[in-house]
Each structure stands twice: as C-alpha cells, then as structure tokens.
Image (cartoon, rainbow, N blue to C red; front, top):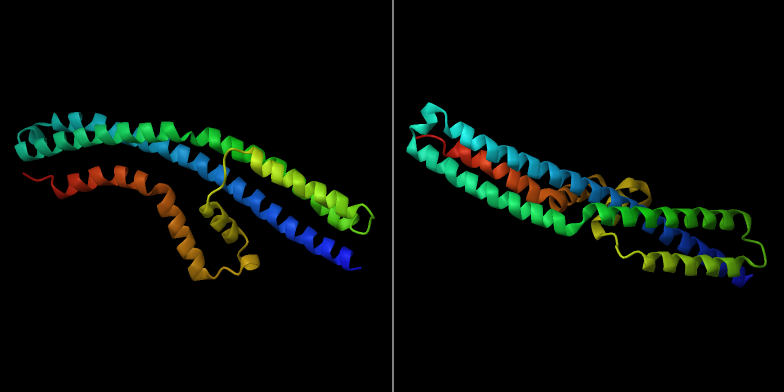
Length: 206
C-alpha cells in the first residue's frame, strides 16, 4: 500500500512539473515571436524617422532656423546608429528560430502530459503503473535535454499569471509581474522609438 501511495504522489508531482514546463515553453515561444515582430516594427519606425527628417529639413521655415536644423541633423545621425545597433541585435538573437524550437518542444511535452494524465486516471491501479511512470519520467527528462533552448523565469511568471488561483497570485503581485515583463522585453524598443520625438518636441524652437 505504501508503494502505491508513493507512486501516486510521485505521479502527481511529475504531472505538475510537466504541466509547468509545457506552459512556460509555450509562453517562451509566444514571447520570442512577439519580440521579433516588435523588433521589426521598431526598425521600420526608425527608418521612417530617418526618411522623414531630410523632408522636414527642406521646409523653408525649418531650413532658415540653424538651431533646429542642427538638432535634426544630430537626431538623424543618432537614428542611423540606433537602426544599425537594433538590426544587429535582432539578427544575432534569432528570435524566430528559438521560438520554433521551444514551440516544437512544448508540443511534444504536451503530448507526454496527456499520456501521463491518462495513465494517472485509468491505469494507476495496474501492476505495471510504476514502470510506465518511470518511463514517462525518463522521456520527460530527454525532451527537456534535447531542446537547445530553455524558457526564462519571466515565462514561468507569466504562466503563474495565467493560473492565478492555483498559484495564489494577488492583484498587486499580478500588476507588478506584468509591468516587470513589459520592462524586461520591450524597454530597449520603447527607448529608441520614443527618444527622437521627445528630443524634437523639447528642442524644436529657434
């Protein structure tokens, strides 16, 4: 009886671990795809800024103002640097490829999770339950190891937000986690997109 109880307890523990890993890796894949799209959009916006500045400088009232003209020239140079740096960073991170690997791995873990759920529900009293359980545990470890990418702590934080009742996440904690996730993922993009307009507004008078 004690062996059966231990096996049931381990099965539940294993099921929870697989559930968390599956959810976190799906979140990681979605997060990386969103970062890729946001990065491409940011580069496009910076390019629009860069094209717009010479057009603005050609306006007679602007062209006559040396201070504003000098400011726009400086901003244009900064934008070129920002665009180059952001393009290099996005190209080196391979967000799409990493997202695909994590998604495929999460799909396989999800299939294993369903298999374990069936085993717990329908075969927990069978004599070979512990053997099958051990096999699923080994398969889970192999699936985790074979994926070259891993989810980040923020992906698990997002998973906890998706199941607030299970993890007892309070409203204030939920707000803090969302703000933290927003800052971690998008602070650079927001900075490079937002700085040029702010500078232009603050220092656009002769």
